[in-house]
Image (cartoon, rainbow, N blue to C red; front, side, top):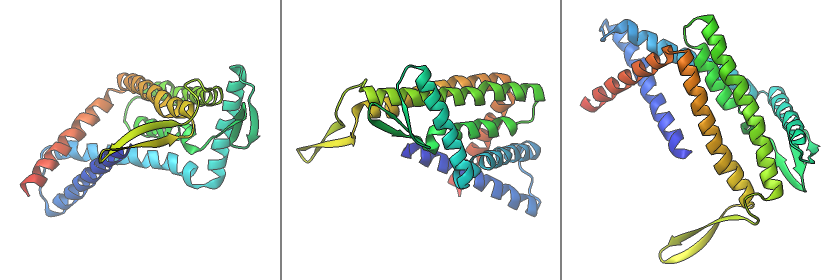
Length: 240
């Protein structure tokens, strides 16, 4: 997770450098290779970023919207768990209990990050409205429903100890001494949530992204153009 964050931060810095360099070149009257294509690519990336932020941050920062989203997901997860046959109890507005095991639903459990990302990418692309609508329907509702299934699965795994009882521990050797490090108080929760559920989410997002790319091939052109600009900018940085 830390590595992914660093990679994304690095890419953002390069894109910011590209945009600033393009602005300075335009002020100096310097023409870049394919200036129209360069400006179009950077404008599209900026649009996507803006849409993602406008969709995500209200739920992250405005308490009423944050509370509404988490409460809604908690209610629907509770309903789905009941459909699955789990004798769950609604402990609080964002908590579900099963077999005396309490699970708290937080913002990350709502899939808002993935939904906002796909929402911004799809709406930031210039394409036919029909294909944009199809891409939205193939991604946003699917991600939301799969996330509810994921939440219910984690609750069941945690409460019924599907993947073992006791804490999740690893042995660490430091200077010929062996230490036991506790990753989580519940092995079933750790394996269900951090390993199985996240792996399943990654696979699902891969296939959803594939469908979106098939519906919006313009995205492939954007990715290719952006990659070419990043490579060009990195070469210029290395040359000084």
